[in-house]
Length: 454
Image (cartoon, rainbow, N blue to C red; front, side):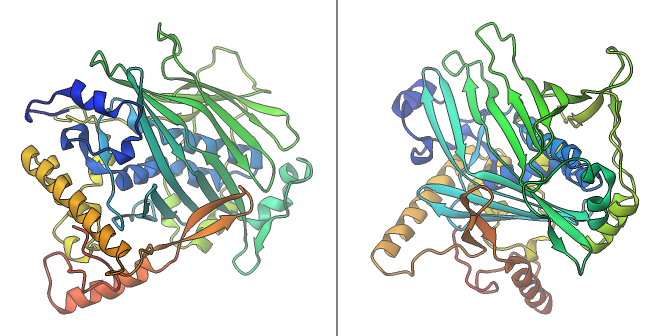
């Protein structure tokens, strides 16, 4: 973890943290990897193709299966990564735009006690959003990480899917479809909860991560459900990284068995599968021309005329992407490495609160460990001083800039909703920067109601 940094008495730090919530414990920077938790949130989108494929599947049970595959894929990037991301400062943000995948993502640290991060991703024909409060404790030689909060996916689907025999023969849905007649689509809402994560082998300095529990993905409109179980390994390590699962239709009938591991691939087998039991699983390829659709309206029309039929033989639901291993001290995925990219032409237009401007994180990335530790302490002290000034009335009360708290009737839980202001404000700030011929990061004065947190 230290990669040549100063010597560290690991046991003295662990001893002082046993039984405590680590979100309230300041640990040396040498426990970190050079990313922010807001960036780790964005890593959920590495396998966003699964959501695009889901929007092209006419049968609701198939769509729920692929959304569950996407939910499971969120954990693949954690394999071999034992260093923790930097805890975001209050008001810290991270934006990420993928023109090739046609989505844009924004995360913000919306609360500090308890620490809550919110993420909102807008694709052509889907929205993914989540917020989480992570609690972590040392217990008997392992670190247990328990996230709270609900993950949401909303798919925009062609109205034509409602008229197909697959839908008519499936039985009564739990909710009437939410229809947008003007744009020719209806939406489906899916939710699930995050899993508990254990970091094992701390006392013997042989670290490994396992995720434990059920990913239970529910389609609130149809009632279809897919459950993927992350098995807990015993002391022999028999079920290490293994997952099993099943997909149920709205009537409770099993339609798929699921098996594999979260470090390599998942295979789904229809219960009415044809062919031999030893037949090699088929791969469903992402249509190469999916990116050709630009607007949500175009994407929905494309899905209506280019729907995909899932094979009636075993098929690969998800497969891990190749990972760069050379000069990869922190075992980051190739996707994760891209999140710190800060090309010169982008710098003037990023929000001043973006994680890529964090001086401690940047110093960690470049191997300047002493500077990183000094800067981390400075930022934490600055945040404490700002909180005291708010408590004393010297500063206005804290209010998140880009998210508002609302209530979701489907999950019966509160959530943080994107207020749609960020991208408009970004465009306005970018215009001011262009007019000024700026090549350096924008000051907080360029952006409306943004604080200097670094």
